[in-house]
Every structure is written in structure tokens, then in C-alpha cells.
Length: 134
Ligand SMILES: Nc1ncnc2c1ncn2[C@@H]1O[C@H](COP(=O)(O)OP(=O)(O)OP(=O)(O)O)[C@@H](O)[C@H]1O
Image (tube, rainbow, N blue to C red; front, top):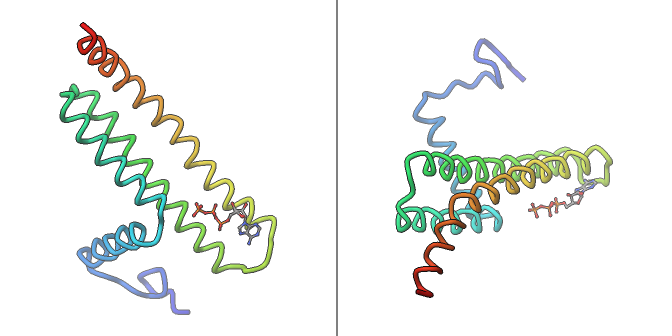
């Protein structure tokens, strides 16, 4: 394997090609990973809700961060699952730990996202329910 001057396998792509491969990666994740599709649909619903509820500048920053990091982590989790499956088809403790830790990372940030969502959206929803009652 020629690592050459350009590092990994001696390949060197122009920048636009790297962006193209990354876009293919997003497409592949959407096509093959149910969890990524669910996150994408929920994210679109959250963006519409944020627009309807007229979020503040700071609230938008938190919402965008929560959406972006959650989907990114989910894709890294899927990538790691593939890398592990490529490395071994056998049962292996290290394979289990690698997959479970990656899933744990997704879970940690999902819990943070739920807190961010609750802090931003719950007070507004309660406000709307009060208005509907009166
Ligand atoms: N080669 C392996 N050796 C040991 N344990 C494994 C191996 N592959 C998978 N596992 C265990 O089985 C679980 C399920 O693995 P799988 O690859 O199906 O991922 P998954 O968690 O179902 O993925 P998804 O996020 O797509 O639902 C892993 O979390 C891990 O605990």
C-alpha cells in the first residue's frame, strides 16, 4: 500500500471531490439507516415548529446544534458499525465494546437534545395550551 506524500493510499482529491464523497455519505446514510431517516424527519418537524413558534436567535443556535450533532453522531455510529463488521464477522468482545460505546455516545447526546428541546419548546406549548383553554 503506497502511503506516498499524500498520506492515505497515496490518493489526493481536489476539495470539491471530498465534498462530493461526503454528500454521497449523507445520501447513503439516509438510504440505508432507518435511524438516520427518523432523525431527519424529526429534525424537519422541529425546524418547522421553531419557525412557527418564532424562536429567538439563541434558541435557534441550540436547536441547530442539537439537530446537527445528533445526526452527525448517528452517522459516525453507522460508519463505525460498518468498519467493525468489515474487521470481523466473528463474535468479539472488542467489536461488542466498540459498537456499544458508539451507541452510548449517540444516547448521551440524545438525552442532552431532549433536555434542550424540552427547555425551549415546553414553555411555549404550555403557553399555547393556556391560550386554547381561556
Ligand atoms: N462482531 C460482534 N461481536 C460481538 N458483539 C457484536 C458484534 N456485532 C454486533 N455485536 C453486538 O450486537 C449489537 C447489535 O449490533 P448491530 O451491528 O446489529 O448494531 P445495532 O445496534 O443493531 O445497529 P443499529 O444502530 O443500526 O440498530 C451491538 O451493539 C453489539 O452489542
